[in-house]
Image (cartoon, rainbow, N blue to C red):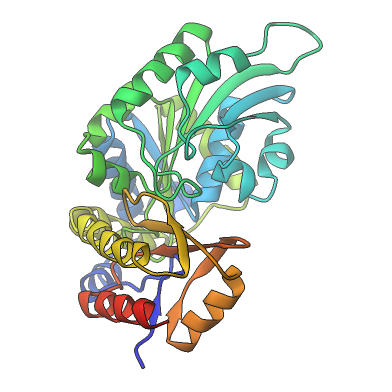
Length: 337
């Protein structure tokens, strides 16, 4: 029986080429700024997105939490969608690390607009927290991999500029979004004060994310990373995987999207599926007649691993370790389940 792991795009293993890059990396002490591979990754990522500087961290949660800490003060408030990863899946870090409150909005599949945001910006009044930051997520995990285009981001950025707010992007799957929209990564620096880019999801690196911003913000971010315990030493062995991923695994994300479309089409024709959320990238959300836990057990018995996101909703995520023959196997088993 074949095993197909669709739980997340974080389950990937390094490819042979990536392992070779890691093995041959030149390293030093990154806390001293002496790991040339880490330095090269940070410079490469910053240049890709038109940003001044970058910092390499162990996880996307850390880069997001550092950004929020850099862009807010205690008694502030940030605005985000109610599905936002920074709010739902980062352990209450917004309150714990930064001492700020969160204004949650109900975007369509996690996508916000300037018209939604503007009425939620607090007036300057001692009774209200000071609104200082807007956080967007691209792609939106809970939205089933839904994407912002730059044309949707531009008016939000203009609103933030006009009202004196900073704008941060949780870009955990930003390259999936770019593969779908065709927008240029280079243009993101025009709109965002901070961008978090995860290397260990669809790009297939084993560890790490980078936070991109201006030099002053990144200098402060290094202090926050140290406080959070994120200072790594000979981290170049890991950073080399990130460089390899950026060089070799960006274009192939379209393959993952194609695989997701094939599975989504099969699910739409399956009688025990009541709804398939439109698929844009590599995440498939679908609703089931039976409780999700029942369906997951049946899938597990066929070697297909997946997760639920609600009592009757299941998530599949495609990635570089899901190959065409595995896609065919999943489609066949879905029809026979």
